[in-house]
Amino acid sequence: MRATVFVVFLVLVSFVPPATAGIISWNVTYADGNSAVGFGLGNAVGQTRRNTFEAALNYVSATFDTADVTLDFAVNASETDGGGFLASAGTYFFVTPGFSNGILYQHATTGIDPTGGSDGFVTFDFGYNWNPENDTPTVGQFDLFTIALHEVTHALGFLSLTGADGTSRLNSVDPGPHSVLDSFLVNGSGDPFFAAGGDFIGNTADLTGNNVFFSGANAVAANGGNLVRMYAPATFASGSSLSHVDLTTYPGAVMTPAIDPNVAKKTYSEIDLGILQDIGWTLRSSATVPEPNSFIALAGICGLCAYRRRASLAA
Image (cartoon, rainbow, N blue to C red; front, side, top):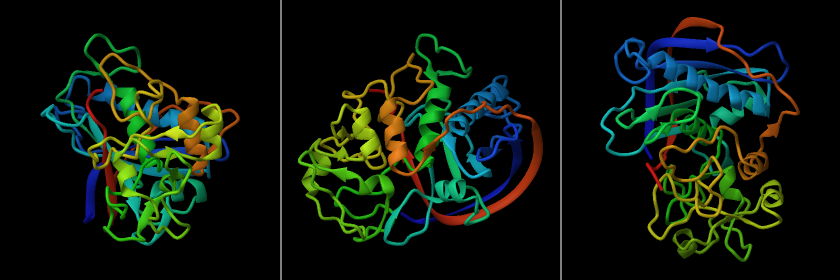
């Protein structure tokens, strides 16, 4: 994984939740700007798409108890070829051995901005047939809210940094930087894949043997006391393997590796929430969903090691 420097000179949309202690506000930059592409305001549905994306962020704010903080999220220039993934997203990591949820989590939970730049980023491909509204998709449409929520959740730290050989995908080193989610991965017998310092101690054959499970207490409780099966297909799918729950086992979860048209998942499943709690997020007891309320301009720069994971097109 190479170091990536993002330079942003974009229009920033700032929407701030009601004055509630411990909630995330979001500054969202849209690289599409005023163009006629994707989220561009020159596009007839551009503003509708922005509203739906922001609704997904608002849902995240209403779900988790955090520091009272404003996070920066970059929506990269939209793709339009419809030839690959529906969307891809990620956050930034410091390349040091051990386990981390990434920059977005660190900023959200401590209130301290470790970089002064973007906390997370996402790219959508609008070459497919999308449902731009936050409602029920019609025949053949992929639901924007559902996929936006899925992608933003990866930026929260719901992802793996482990490659097919057990080394870190950021620097191909063992021990290397891995995600907190990685620290909970075990095989079907309950044997961990990692030692406390980030050393890989598992069997690499399990990573492509449908024999990877999540062992966190909250997720296990949500799964009836059973380990949660993760997505570990016979062919290692970079950025997808280990970063999702198994689709066949948990079809209602937001964090499956693929989605069909016409499917809408507007809220996290208990499995999703259990894993998010186990990696460090705290659920809010109650919350009011925030509404957009202001627009400002921004010029910013951020350079860190970025991890991007991708979502598949369909099951």
